[in-house]
Image (cartoon, rainbow, N blue to C red; front, side, top):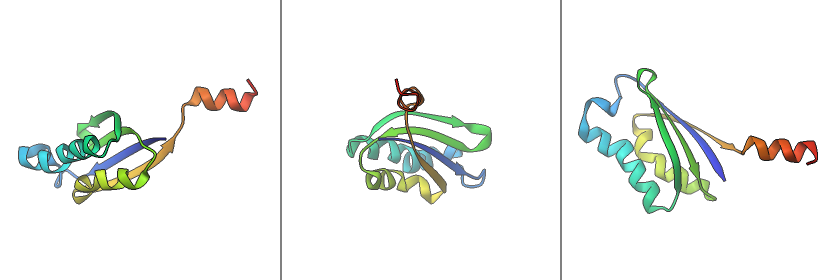
Length: 95
């Protein structure tokens, strides 16, 4: 199942100003995803908005929550299940 993650932190809690903080937060998130077998399809950042976007494929939402834990020390995350729009449109149009 695909999940869209939107993580937001403040300028004051931004890890981007400290290499050790980068490693302890998003570096650890990336390492955890790999260790827990989550498929991190992609991650993007809007630097000026202090917002990180991720697409993750996993059948275990609990693993996703645990993987994100290091980043939750500096901000919040909105996690939404998502589906391929072309698949949904085909299903709903009877094709």
